[in-house]
Image 1 (cartoon, one colour):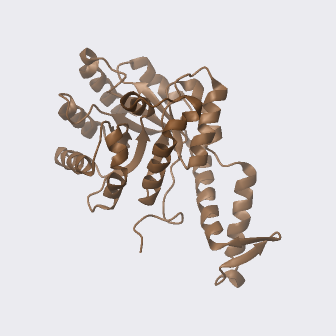
Image 2: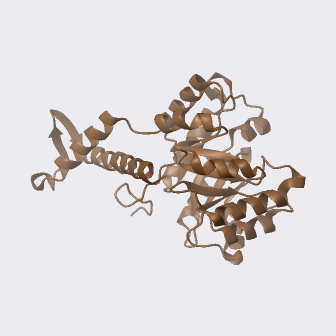
Image 3: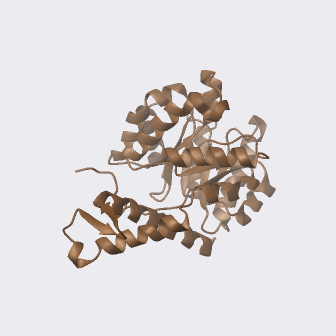
Length: 304
């Protein structure tokens, strides 16, 4: 029996648009409260200069404690565990109690175990999940064993976030030509994530003025099975939300499939006919996931 949550048991939280916000920018932290992003990553790492790390940490912790972000999922990205800022970052996360902590430069299952031990020792809340960046060649090579840590008894891991710019830097692979060189790594990450019940968020699209390019890359990620996209500019939110939402026709058809399988006369059937089309139980499982996502998006829209 698989330990991976099924579509009928898993609670879906929309992560179509996941916007990075620089922790050192107080105005950005405030503006984030008004943006229609599903999730916010308040960043203490790449977006913050070394001499601003302490200021950013204090601002982010204070902002999260003060609240006001509505139904948006709030995530704090720390500096890597092997840096001088890790202990203070982790203490700030514990004090702020965000929805998740995002840890960069994770390369192995041992890293996940070490981070979990550190987080538990620091007193992290059970309500704070662990997200990790997938951004080094070694991480890709170890992706299955990293994802498998989600089955550990003390697990905090719930989500992978792809760092495609770092992957390009470390491997020399290009992001051009529809990320042709990276497709095997992206699909490998998606397969590992979903094998163990994790969400996976695609990397950023760097040219925030290129709406067509962003749309194409969102479409590519959605076709691969990504759950959403990380963003670097508020102007990218609408595109990501639209591209990672199931369309009305798909949701309506999914509701028909569910209703048909829920009829008493179909209780023990593995295959039925709906509107003249053959539909199997696996289609019902897909339909339930689609409807759960659509309902979660609708709920978020009314509470954001």
